[in-house]
Amino acid sequence: MDIRQLRYFLAIAKEGQITRAAKKLNIEQPPLSRQLKQIEEELGVILFDRQGKGMTLTEAGAVLQVKAEAILQQMDETVTEIKELDLGIHGTLKIGSVFSCVSLLPEKIAYFREHYPQVTFKILEGDHVVLGDYLANRSIDLVVTRLPFESNYDSSNYGILRLPSDPFVMIVPTNQKWRPSNSDVHLKDLASMPLIALKSDKTVQLNEKVVNECRRLGFEPNIVCECSSVSITIALVIAGIGVTVLPKSVLSAFSVADIDLFELPDITVQSDVGIIWMKNRYLTKKARQFIELFKAKNEDEK
Image (cartoon, rainbow, N blue to C red; front, side, top):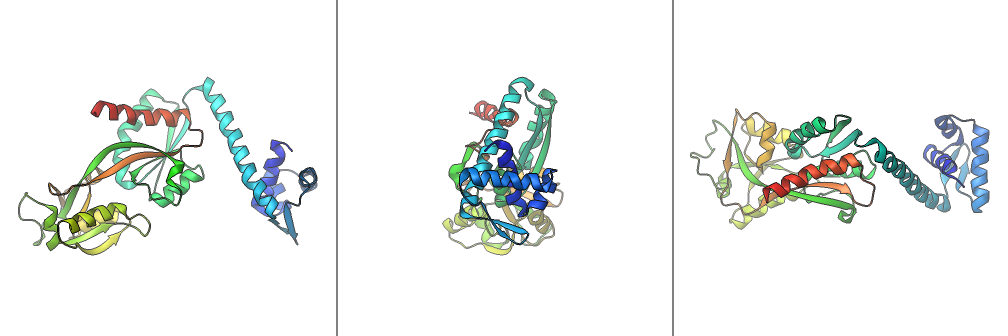
């Protein structure tokens, strides 16, 4: 059994039918059927249950599918690694980011484009769950995100570079009678104001930090709305629905004409930030070099 046959097998498994798989592979159906028969005869097992024109994996087929995907991925990564020895840093660097960390990217991308002009970028935005899926299926190379990374995958799968923490600030609309009356604002002042919380069904820890700080100060925040989107949260603040408490760097992506920002001297936690990648996979040279930019800045700030 060779690499070509493994690709044939995976195409059949994906399409669930010889005819569709042959069309996808741009080969005739009879040769593909013969290749599948050869694999089954070599292994001495049946890999598919035939049900009319459809085909589903047997238990043995499901095991081979997992192993074949891993083998082909390792082969592809080996080819990429060998090519990079001669070609240097080139190609497309695919980065995922939560919206609240987007402000960390422009400076680094500008530097990278200046020093490695053969590299182009693809940026995908989403929450932790979406970005975790993108990493798992190799749609992106790395993620710039808030920590902890609340994906559907075990955290032991990830390599992590921790970046400087980000302080929380209170963001309030202008011209509201219930807004703070002076510049000396504390988190405890939130007790008398409506709060718009940034959270989704699965990404909750950023909001929990704020709520736990409120409880430490002896009050339960008056949450009038929960949003999974930073943009919607800020839009609701601008509309005068309430205030929000977010990491300070988030504001760099917005015009602040209709909102005010207040430091919070009585809050004892900060928002942790980091870069995430799959540590047990080959990381391209361009991805490693991009991470090095953040490492260098960390060292300069120590």
